[in-house]
Structure formats: C-alpha cells, structure tokens
Length: 177
Image (spheres, rainbow, N blue to C red):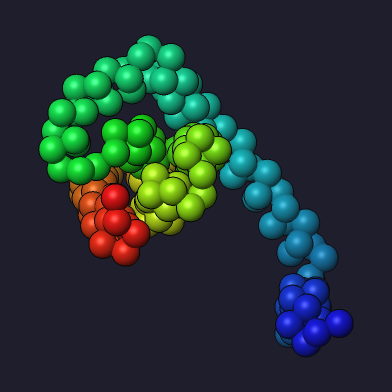
C-alpha cells in the first residue's frame, strides 16, 4: 500500500477521532452534540425539499417545452459565424440551472462526439469552468431565508458567462476547432 493510499484511507477517520478526542478533552458531551447535529441536518434537508422540488420541476418544464431547441436554432447563425459549435449551447444554458442536467448533457456530448473531440473537450472544460448559480441561490439562499438575492444572481450569472467564454477561447486556442 502506498503512502498516498494509506493517507486517503485513514484521513477522515483520523479527523473524526481528533474531533471526538478534542471534544472530550474540552468536556463537551460529544455524543449529544452529534445527535443534535444530526437532528439539525434532517431539519435542514426537509427545509430544502420545496426549493429543490421547485427547481427540478422548472427544469423539466423548460426541457419538455421545446424552449431549449428553439433557443439553439435561433442562435445557430450567430454561433456558426463565431466558430462555436451549436451542440454546446444546451450545456451553456443548463449549467447555471442544474449540475445534474448539465452533467447528463456533457455525458451525451462525450458519448456522441468522443472525449478527445473538440466538443467533448469543450464540454468538459465548460463543466469545470462554470457553476450551478440558480441552484445555489434557490437552495442555499432559500434555506437560510435570504430574500434579496439580486446582486448575487447578477454576479453569479456574469461569472458563468465569463466561464463559458473562457472555455470556448481556451479550448479553441489549445485544441483548435
């Protein structure tokens, strides 16, 4: 067994043991604190469900309505002029909304075009260069009761746009089209 494998196997159990030993040293009732944390975690999970369900239903409606295909078709002439493959647009649109849906699109693109194709590399780079902004705002801001999220939404979507543009530029420069 290599040293890296040994460290990765034992790191989390050692951290947990360290926390328990330190808590006992400080005379904190560690088991009761653990149970209380578990209760809070379950309460948090239940409070997130309405936000998560609303996001999932919205995504399903968006995809089933044909709006995605309409957007891709309307952007195709512009994208072709810029040398951007139209197949990547659904990923660029979906990624700020849902990480799972974006991962499914990335998987489909890689299955269809191959992992070493320009589209496969661009999809992988875009997946790593952007975040699920709307999901984060809906679930996490909703869970803690933040109502005013306008500035966070603007900054998050702008960062996603920059990530998409940077992915296209870097992949075109490094891998060519």
